[in-house]
Length: 497
Image (cartoon, rainbow, N blue to C red):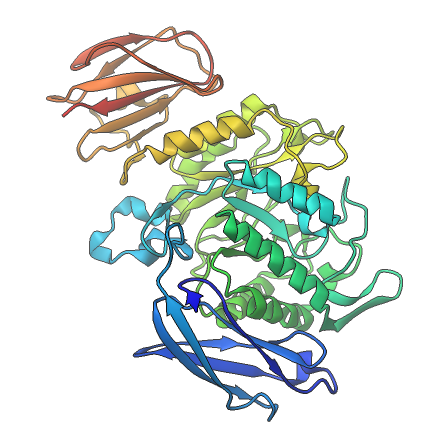
């Protein structure tokens, strides 16, 4: 019995002559009444083939295989699917892909939901090469994630060769090694099984695996495989991994550092992924300096690296207007002490950027680069040592309390004079909720013109010290509230019925 949104798997025996990775194709169309899903099977070595399927609703799903290998052709498959258990919400999708148009607001295009309609707010972290580390470090990474607030991990399939990343992994996606070379026509089943194990473990922790398919930090030749080999690899990766509900696709990390790949190449790669992914997982592409056109229809959300030395999360407002999609600032710089400017901001500054981005209606990803530790989280995983993760957890709790439909405050002639200088997340339709964030400003007091006919409770939130102080009484009309003249303060107002 397979649980809804989990993976049904059937192993089959077929030919191992020649190169089955290239020579053999295997398909199956799963049907449940009028609904059907076509999946691609894949070869996993030693004459073994697998067909996987993620049932999206309970019931009996039946399929008959099709293949150019007679041993794999016309095999009947049956998947008995039970309803999803508590906590199993299905894939994460954009909200406008989950709900009917009549149930959507203008703001919904900027946010995510699970398949069952439950709201999902990504609070991500970056561990580029954690699956390429020794097993003990990988297990330590999972334990750290289990105890953290993070619900999305940016991670590569290929290993990374860059500052503080110079070791060879124990195995690779393709057969071969650096000394003897790689066979780009044959995959290494051992590597893929290990990768799948880690994706399953992330899913058990409720964490989305944001899979980076290509990147430029390479000494093995994976970044220069050529268009046909890239497509061969992408098809295999999607055929194996798309059946896990917690997978997102990132076409590249810093695509513009791969100048030998054209925009036409990236568009071709995106079409390849979409063609092989029968479930329509989330898709993005990530920049270094040059922004990709996130208005392209295949891109479900914008995955952005800050493009200014100082201005980061403040740009969420502009990016929302430009792309009309969820904005995920997957690299707003990292907390740490590396010699590069992208990896030596303070915990205070990273926490500020998270608050700034969330209040403006976007999402951010964390990273940590402290060079005095053997494992550096941003690449290796291991343990967290910084000061901002617990503050991000505090912010996550605050954001979970924000009512559905809340949006960044729109400046109008009525509120412009009072609110133009402070980002605010609010429910303007009924004036029921306001969350103001002061960032690095530290006013001694603040005046407000509260909505007519409404009364509010007011809380002062110290986002760094992680305290919430409820002010006495109920507030209405024109008011003044005193503030502690500290940076990183927020004010939360909730309407009293």
